Structures are given as structure tokens and as C-alpha cells.
Length: 437
Image (cartoon, rainbow, N blue to C red; front, side):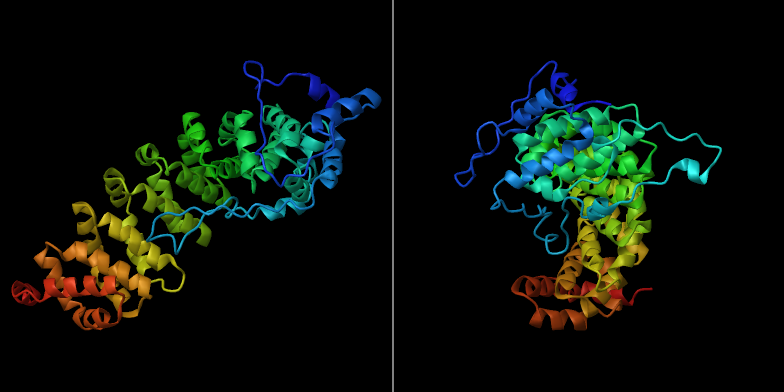
């Protein structure tokens, strides 16, 4: 069994070449702690007087928490804005896909030996802190990053353990530590956790993989961590999780890729590394949350022309056209935004028309939400601005009456778009095309 004292005097592998000096954010409202009450001081003092083990480390953390200022408030959820068009319909936050609260009451897993008498039970490492996945979020919220540093170091050592149970528990704790607080995200990343979490993305244990990908997602909510995670080669392992993970793991891998895609150079890398086919698969077969995550990432990376072409080739247009008719779920508007993006390429425009996108978009103008009508108009303008055949198809679908109505009742911008499209359709040459077979 490893003692807290041992963990204090034994150098971690992350600090052998470069010591870490973490300076907590300065705040005029921060309550000063009594001198000598840091986590390091408590560890050192207790080690002199008793043989304290890691199994009671979280108990000591609890004592620390009660001594912290009661006026500290919880950090609000971090929301990511995708674009002006998308922000009304999507938001990704730490663990939004993972239902992290279940970890606080997660029962201890049954031993495989109970269900399979022929299977050897997994050797149990030291009992205690790194052996349990439950971890008090109340304690985490009340302790400063300076006092959490020894705990973070223990978790990082656990990520490199030979025991899958310890790896799983360590990743779960880092996931929780990074959930809500930006200062903890900075601390964990700077302490060296990122390469070990990335390595665990290829774990064959589903729960370990889920904890690792969600911990990385939480770290990526801090903008400063995005380049660090990219430089450690996270894109391909995250795509591996998209292909092999549980529903929650796939969702959180998609959200992690979304965060990485906020770096312009990563948009091409994510698409070029093979993310688009598994994102399309998640859009087709995922849960409601997974579909929203997938379509959001596709929207973000399809800002790059080459990714638009990849998405079209991966068969996403058919799915998007089908979603245009799913009113009330928020997916119809999202689908039309992505269709509008794909319509920026010749191949995208051709595919939308061939799949039957024009009737679906006309129906959206008739029955969709106000936002949906505007998005449908934007896509139809791209389809018809320089294509006489598409204008004829649009006229045959009966679009003129709802367009006229919308040009009188929409927003100023929507009215302008409707009038522009009506102008295309009223040109004399469209009469011939509309009557052709």
C-alpha cells in the first residue's frame, strides 16, 4: 500500500525534467487561509505523526474543504458559440453528453468471478482513493488548485498504473476535477495528464475509454489547452473513439473534436484524418444527443471546402434532407444550416437536388419555424441563383405562394431573400423551363 507520505517524497515522472509551479489566480475577494494550511503542509505534518495512507486522502480533502471560504461560488457552465446561425440551436459543455452526475452514486462493479466462475478475478491494487470512482464534487468546488496539486499528481500516476481499475478510477477523478473549473483544467493540463489520457482513448475497457475522452473534453473547454492537446496527437485517437466507443464516448469524442476545430488548422486535419464517415454514422444511428453533437461538428469543419466535398461523398446529404422534415426537435434548422454550407460547392448543389432537397426545402418554407424558413431560403438561393433547371423545379413545387407570403411577413433580411428568389423565378426564361418535362 502506498502512503501519502511516500507519494509526497517520491518524485513523479512528470516533474523529473521540469518542476511545475502553479500560481492560482489572484482575486481581491479571496479569503486568506491560515498560514501553513496548504495541502503540502498538512501532508508533511501528518506524515511525521502517523502512517497515513492514500485511502484517507479524500477524507483530508474534505477537512480542507470545510476550512475554505464559504463565499466561493460554483463556476457557470462554459458554452461554445458555433456561429451566429448555429448559436440559437446548439451548445456543448463539459459532460453535457455524459450525465456525469451518475458517477457520484455509481455502485461498485460486481466482480467478474461472480458471473463467470472460470474467470480469474482482476488483482486488486491498493484500496482507497485511486480504487474508487466516486468522488465528492462538493469537495472539489471548495479547494484551491494549489491544494489540489498533490491529488492531481496522484491521479496522473494512476493513469500510468498497470492496473486497469486504477487507470479507470484516476481518469474518472480527473474528469470530475476538470468538469466545472477553468483553473483546475489549467492545472491538470500543465501537470502532464494529457498524453496519458490520450493513450487511454484506445483502451479496450469501455468505462476507462469513456472517462478518458470526457476528461479530455473537459480540459478542452479551456481555450489555452486546445493547442496542447492537438500537439500531443489527440485527433486520430478521438476519431478511434468515434468508431469504437459507447454512445456517451462517441458523443463526447465529437464534442472534443468540435473544440479542437476552433483552431483553423485543425478543421482540415479533423476532416483529413477520417472523422467525417464516423460523424455521419453517428448522425444516422446515434442517440438524440449524439446526432446533435455530430451535426454540430460537421457544420464547424465544413467551413473548409475540402471537407464539404468529403461530407457529400460520405452520404450526409440524404440524412440532412430527411432531417429537414423533423420539425420541433431543432434538427431541422441545424440540417438546413449544414445543407446551406454544402450548397457552396457544385457537388453539394447537385447532390441536394438529386436527393430531393428542393421539395423538402419548399415544405420548410410553408410549415417550418421562422428560423427554418430563413435557412431554407438561403439554401434555395444558392441552388437557383445561376441554375435555370433548378428554378423550374422550384416553380413546379409551388413555392411562389409561400414565398410571397414570407416576403410580406418575415424579418427585413428574410423579406429581402424572399424577394430576391421571387425575382429569379419571375424571369421569362423560367416559364419555358417550368413547362419542360
